[in-house]
Length: 274
Ligand code: ZN
Image (cartoon, rainbow, N blue to C red; front, side):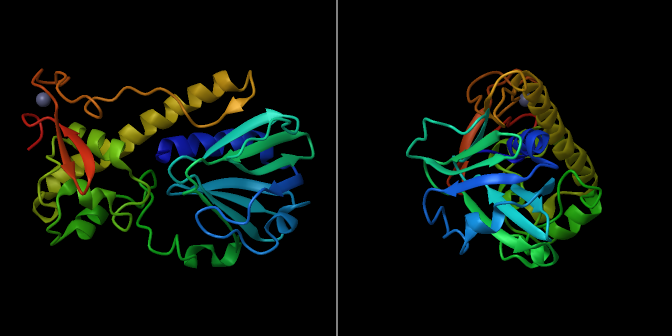
């Protein structure tokens, strides 16, 4: 599943070809993704200039001229493939295809169809049903230890679940929660409301650091990718605990543990994380 760094890398890759350009051609090859596409979806976008590409949590915000935002979520399996020229090998899972006036074409491919697209007036974006409840953006200055402490106060859920709660902090997923808790030395099983402020003061910079390192890795992948047409947003990153069950902890050499929390795998070191 694309996590925040993959979405950010996809946003940057799209921005390189879309910003300042006009959407000259767009085809929606079905009427729905996870949700129905808005009425007159393709006709509303066609001909508009792309002013900027932003991101909120794992949503890509394509800001179109005329005060309209094209909201995109990649879901579980969505990917954007960029190539020069309209594709002539359109597959069953290529649901939305569009091209700029310069001739760059983007294919949104989503085999599982948990992705979504919507059109929202820019002045109503923050009230959109999917964005209204989101907590602070983890890489923004709004996300501080004091803000996290207030959000976790009294919470009887484990830290792992609390950090996956999008109202606490927006856009964090399974991988980067595991990695950040490891770097901060906090057990994923510890009840959120019981973590002391000085430990949250280590956790907030750890979250920003794991995300930024991955965003940088994504940025390097984009530089390679610019040479050739292809798929945006996927790149190699090395994890310290994620998906390393039984392998030695990078700090104490004891085996990394895996447990299941809220139906999802948690990886952690029972010695380094308390
Ligand atoms: Zn360890």
